[in-house]
Length: 450
Image (cartoon, rainbow, N blue to C red; front, top):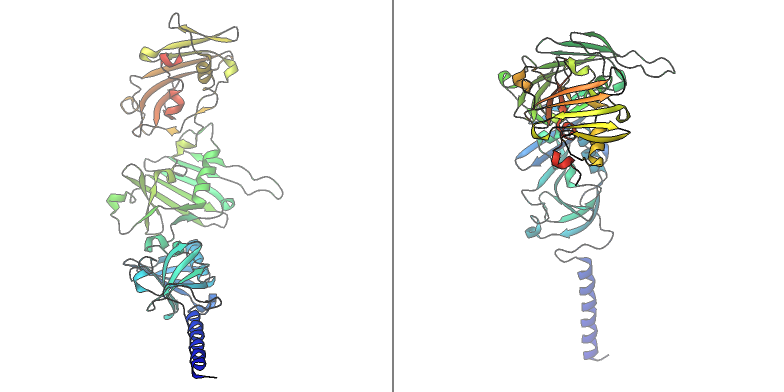
């Protein structure tokens, strides 16, 4: 072998060795060879019992105690069981995939830099893992061990499972129980109105009995059985929208609540909710009677539960089937009209020489069947309801003796979504959805056949 051949052989061998080393050591920003292990051993459920989650400047420490989870810093409060359990379980499902980058300059882009979400996993006070949890892409989440530059992709874990401040980790439950366990409901108002209802235990093999009124300071006949069912359904798993810490009693009104509702369960335990003042137009202050925590609840989140005793009364405004109607008269300023059924056909008898559109007439005549209000006005005075001078009067006549409806329409409610409506001469004023009234109070131009 001459010298040139030997040199060529050595050069070739060197190139082969360099190639092997290059393949075994990934370039910056590339993934390692298949089969590379992650930077940490797989976490087992019994290997940790504490999470320290830092989002921005907000650090929350959560401990697992048996099957329960509790926030221990910056406050002491029960943690949201579902959210916390999901976070703990995600760590046990974590599977390391590949290195995405080891360039520090890319950490912010991958959301794992020094300002990124930090999750410290501990057993007692001993750290088990210290992770920056970054963005999720293609079902893989970016992770970086604190103090290291390598950014890994991983499965089984997602950023949203940890990306919460302290309030988001807190248990927002106001009341919680099994609906079937409720046997008594008592509701009282600030003004002294009261209703007490009971639901007997179901007989073996029999159907569950319905709620019954055993005491009421206001008339609730006919009784609307759907109301207590809705109240119990709401309270069985009722969650707040926000927390109010260290509120002023005069601000919340909870020292003299507008409404108090107590549910008694079959095991004798009770849960009592106090409903206080409004905050703005869309929120209310709420708390449990035996606990200091005050909550804010959105109006829509409170509607099924916030029922005064009078609200347990049936709210039927009018109930005339289309086939029994013989006349509908509306007195409404320039848009007054009268429709009469003649030979099974509807005709407009007022205004004179007016021909109504059959499809529009049908919309009106079918509106009186099982027509219900939303509730009852708290203030029945003519000034509050606008019924001192009604904006409209609706008369519906029936071919059945004793049937018929006379409805006076007053002013809109403050939120512009309902009208005050008086049925006949009864003193209590209905709150009726605006859309259900407006389908009758049509403009003549819209009713006219084109």
